[in-house]
Image 1 (tube, rainbow, N blue to C red):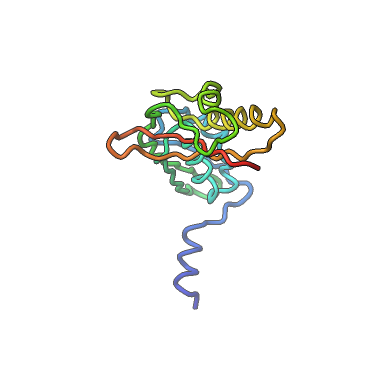
Image 2 (cartoon, helix red, strand yellow; image 1 turned 90 degrees about the vertical axis):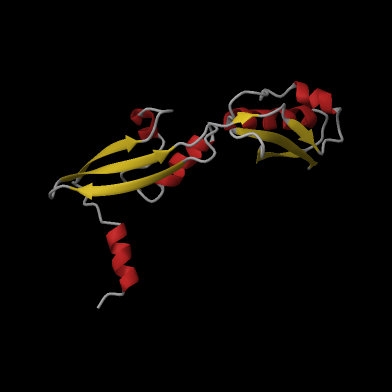
Length: 171
């Protein structure tokens, strides 16, 4: 007799034969098209990793509460479909200019002048990564090595907004 937990595991993760044709359908998405979302995931090969991949991709564009769920349904022996349900949530904006904390090497105004993330813009992980690289390069030009970590905190009294702080620490 199989253990109940093993039965649940088998039911939750069906084996997909190699010759099975699976259509992928996305629901709940308004920010990106299905074609764009297909490129952000390893579906149909790895359905367990897909929710994390899609959630991380959405978070990079400011949807910090985004979640994704995947369901598989078979129809007959040769086909089926994968349904990906996406809950995008709120797209967060930046409240106030980003702060630079821990910098003792240069005046704060100099560092803040090179930042591209601005107040009122949508949170964007790509811009944050570039800002971190700019800070490292600007301070590193003087021969010092630094680590830069971003800290993102949701504004408690203003829904849909975050505060971004760059923490600078000597190498």
